[in-house]
Length: 68
Image (tube, rainbow, N blue to C red; front, side):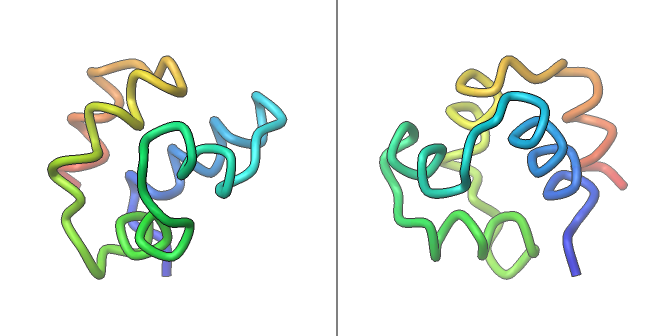
């Protein structure tokens, strides 16, 4: 099950017509590891700022999603 942060990222990917693989390449990780972050298997602390920047996410929404 996607985490609230994962849902935010998947929605942004859809809005920007971008794939998870493209995002993973952009932030320098594997699509598998990106999925681990989106599903909450890994915290992805190291990658969250890069994901936020790559998708131009609203930092307030991200904080809320991560805190949820």
